[in-house]
Length: 316
Image 1 (cartoon, rainbow, N blue to C red):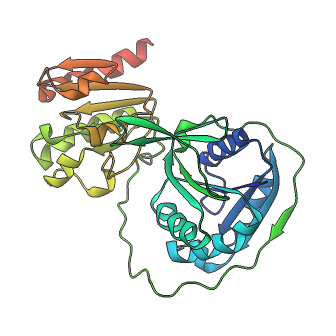
Image 2: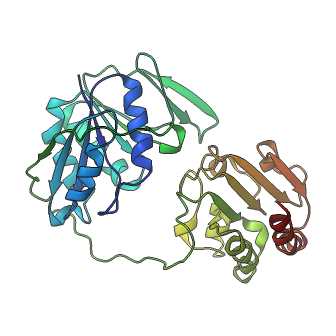
């Protein structure tokens, strides 16, 4: 019995979330192999081989892995899974598309957005936008999982490099093609990995008022987020939406300005270390999960907070 983990990387170095995925895999108790997919990423495979607890690294290098499709990744998983019982991958769009496809072909179990692993193994995953946690035990011979990396402690330590095995990549599934990609250039941290996130909701009232939120974010070296209500109203781009239908974040501190706290939004911030909420409605649901809450007008609080934080940081 062996567990396969799909490594996260940028082509030159492993993403820190790979250590969280490895930590989760080690909880299962079986030998762990890491799968590195990419273009010209042998250096990543060598780094993966030195992680304590990894028994073998599988390396597939091909131009198609620079921008892989869910269909092609599903084919590659299907080729590999006869040798594995469990597959773990980060809960992101690519894997949420590929793993169900592969599971259907393999007649395997598929579980998404797993946040904890218990003995058995049993897997904890949120239901109803995170309002409840379900404890699930897979009944199939093989199980494919997407995990929320922030829910797991990162693996630590190094070892003498384990073997790196080069794989043949499957032929790309040409039924879908990437026509174009649009990205927003920003000097701010990546929203999914930022230690501090400053987010706005419908309460900001207009797109131009987002400048106050962005100013505080830049002051703190933070990422900017938004609720779905703010995105739907045109106050913020879809790329920074946080919540059940947006991105899941797990910062040390999450500032929520003018966010009511709908359950769909709370599903995306449940792993935040400290939640600071500012809302003029004392009955806003966000206060039920906030560690620090202030009932007030964000247009008064934001400038005061921006003015006070440099002095507070200097005196710390």
